[in-house]
Length: 331
Ligand SMILES: NC(=O)c1ccc[n+]([C@@H]2O[C@H](COP(=O)([O-])OP(=O)(O)OC[C@H]3O[C@@H](n4cnc5c(N)ncnc54)[C@H](O)[C@@H]3O)[C@@H](O)[C@H]2O)c1
Image 1 (cartoon, rainbow, N blue to C red):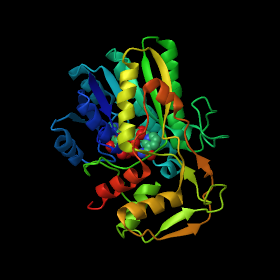
Image 2 (cartoon, rainbow, N blue to C red):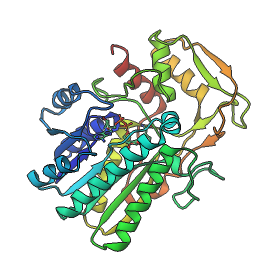
Image 3 (tube, protein in one colour):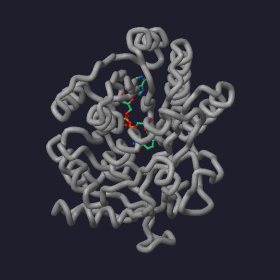
Image 4 (tube, rainbow, N blue to C red):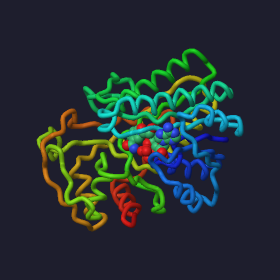
C-alpha cells in the first residue's frame, strides 16, 4: 500500500516508517521538523536500505498538503503530526488547538478532496482523564484534564462523526499508553529538546549527567512501592501495532478504537531500578511532593487489540531500558 505518514520523522512516526517499509509498504512522509531532524530520514535509510519520499510540509499549509495528495496515489494515512507537551499545552492552549486540530482538519479536507478514506490516528490514554478503575477498557468514560488531551478527544470525536456521516470511511484510533525505548539499531528514539516532560527521557539525561537527579513525584500512593504506576510500551511494539491497524482497516468500514499498552503497570522506582540494572548506571533520585492531577495507577486492558488486531506487546521492561540508553548515550 502507499501510506502517507504525517509526523513521520518524529519519535513514533520514524519507528513506524521502518516497520512499514519492512512490511513492504511504500511510505510518503510529511513533517515540518518542529520536533524532529532531517537526519532521521538518513537513519531510516541506513536501517531499511530504502529512501522514503519526503515533503517538508506544515499541516497548517492546506495547499502544500493538498499537493502531496495530488502527486501521490495514497491508500491510507497514518496521522502522527501534532504537539504533545502536556505542560506547554496548559500555558499555550491556542497553539495546541491550532496545530493539532486545524492540522487534522486540513488533512481530512485533503483526504476528502482526493477520495482517501482510510486513516490511523495517534490518540492517547490521556482521553481517559482520571480513570475510575484499572485496567482501562476502551469503553471507559472519556474526559480530559489538559488542552493537549482535549485536542486528542476532539479529534477522536471528529473522526467518529466522519465515520457516521460516510460509511465508506475506515478509521483506526489507537490510544497509546506510555511509549518508551528505541529502535534496536540505536538510530531512532526519543530525543526531546530541553528539560523532558516524560520519565524515560528525564532518566536518560540524569544518566548522561546533564541533569543532576530525578524528581520522583510522591511515594505515598497506594501502589507496591508508593510511586506512580504506568503502562510502558516499547516503541517498536507500538510501531508494529500500526502495521496491524493498517491491515485491520484494509477490508473493514467504520471507526475502531484500541488501547495499545502491555496491560502491565510498572512504578517509577521499578523503571529506575531496571534502568540501573541493565545499563549498570546509578540514577540519583529524590522524592518530591505529588504533582497535582497525577493519579496512582494507570494501565491498559490490552485484550481488544489482542483479539481484533492480533497485537500483543512482546518486548520487556529490560528491553525498553536497554534500548532507550543504547539510543541516547551518544546523542
Ligand atoms: N510520545 C508519547 O508519549 C505519546 C503518547 C500518546 C500519544 N502520542 C501522540 O503520538 C503522536 C506522535 O508522537 P511522538 O512522540 O512521535 O511525537 P514527536 O514530537 O516526536 O513527533 C511528532 C512529529 O510531528 C511533527 N509535527 C508537529 N506539528 C506538525 C505540523 N503542523 N506539520 C507537520 N509536522 C508536524 C513534528 O515535527 C514531529 O516530527 C503525537 O500525535 C502524539 O500526541 C504520543
